[in-house]
Amino acid sequence: MQTYDFIIVGSGSAGSVLADRLSASGRFSVLVLEAGGTDRRFYVQMPLGYGKTFFDPAVNWNYKAEPDPGLAGNTDHWPRGKLLGGSSSINAMVWIRGAREDFDAWRAAGNPGWGYDDLLPAFKALEDNQAGADTWRGTGGPLHVTDCSEAVHPLTKRYLAAGQQAGLPLNPDFNGAAQEGVGIYQISTRNGRRMSAARAFLRPAMKRANVRVEMNALATRVLFEGKRAVGVEYLQNGETKTARAGREVILSGGSVNSPQLLQLSGIGPSALLGGLGIPVLHANENVGAHLQDHVGINYTFKGRLPTLNQTLRPWWGKLLVGMQYILTRSGPLSLSMNNAGGFFRTDPAATRPNMQLYFQAFSTVIPKSGERPILTPDPWPGFSIGLSNCRPSSRGEIMIRSSNPRDYPKIVANAYSTNADVEEMLAAVKFVRKIASMPAMAEIIEEEVLPGPSITSDADLIQDFRKRSGTVYHPVSTCRMGPNPSRAVVDPRLKVHGLEGLRVIDASIFPDNITGNTNAASIMTGWKGAELVLEDQK
Ligand SMILES: Cc1cc2nc3c(=O)[nH]c(=O)nc-3n(C[C@H](O)[C@H](O)[C@H](O)COP(=O)(O)OP(=O)(O)OC[C@H]3O[C@@H](n4cnc5c(N)ncnc54)[C@H](O)[C@@H]3O)c2cc1C
Image (cartoon, rainbow, N blue to C red):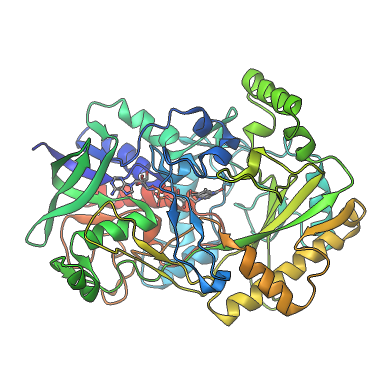
């Protein structure tokens, strides 16, 4: 059995950064176990390819949540990246860090070093922002962030104007001084190719002699001597293998897999483990609990001006954008569908935004089965204003169903299970209609297609968003960080409470969800986590 200083389970947003930072000095050997395969695939590298990878089992775990009463009984699709780069290799690339207040609340909950001012240096150091450096943005870091303001669809201007007519400020940078307002999204790409965590961090690290990456290697159990983690058991090509960690085992499998692997290793709710015949190594009721996620919905309109539908639907349009992409690495295929967006408050008395907006000059009311219909738009000029909640109060859980590591865990999201979450979404969808009714939009709207003009009462609006909402893929907090072992899984140094030599470093440690998309904060968690690991080495 081979021994490494560190074993990292998962090469996703956080795991890729860890592999890079822990190996950079050359002092430590690092093994990365990744259940999926390579990221060298056309639809991974091409930004808009996320429409294709959304259901592709070659790169995606394709989880299904349990039927959710809050979503009218629907079984929600939960994509998660299963390849080098993890979910950062299949995501929609919107680059949002979260709000100052989110991280300040993490620190106030007893996690020193996790406030916004503590983390800002990491956020700046890891990025290479095309818009240039300032108080908030960084340049020269490994991860390139693209400023799309010149590249977005012309209709975006109307969305920005309507947002302002509805009372929101124009925000030049959601990662800057303030979050509120409408603006154009920055995205994680470089020269028209996806900038995943693998591209920014893991691939360069793989050139080092002290880094080994095992692909198609499913970690099945953390190995212990007493209460000290000493290695990992994994399955590869039908064989059970083990590797030994001289210093630490680090779980970076993401919010679904990290709690699953802890539970499979005997760390979790004792009744659950006992019931499945798994010997309890360390009881902790918080493992897999406290699941938080963002849920969202689109309002779709038929317009009077051409949208991306007219470009992407006809065969000759596909050919043109395909050639444009291949020859110049530009055009719609080099972007996210989410050209613009914003943040707003549903309650004017609130101190900060609680809702996020997405503008897509594109619509897919008529989806094609088995494909996220990004490449099969509607035959008429359609566009969508989407929105998702930022800090919902509903809580779910992710728990194993058996002791078999290949069985997918049970994901119980409990979306819209609190009145507060229903009330704020009701107010939010009304605000989307307000934006659409502003002159800059109203004059080019032929009709609202979804949910449609017949849906007007509060009861109908609620029923509609329960039926049509779904995850926007930001699950967090299933191994949450906190100082108190009776309420958290890892401590503020990301060490698993009650055990030695074991940390969790990924989105599952977020004490609470952030106001915005979760990739940047997951990458920051990898960066900050690596600093903590290195500080603790003698
Ligand atoms: C479709 C989609 C769209 C999204 N859009 C955006 C967006 O536009 N902007 C944004 O900021 N965020 C977005 N996100 C969310 C963001 O990408 C994630 O929050 C982030 O990548 C999570 O990082 P992570 O390190 O926690 O986990 P991941 O990046 O998911 O990495 C986990 C890795 O561990 C591997 N792994 C898991 N279990 C095991 C095991 N047992 N053995 C070995 N390997 C294992 C997985 O295969 C995976 O590679 C999106 C996510 C999805 C799925």
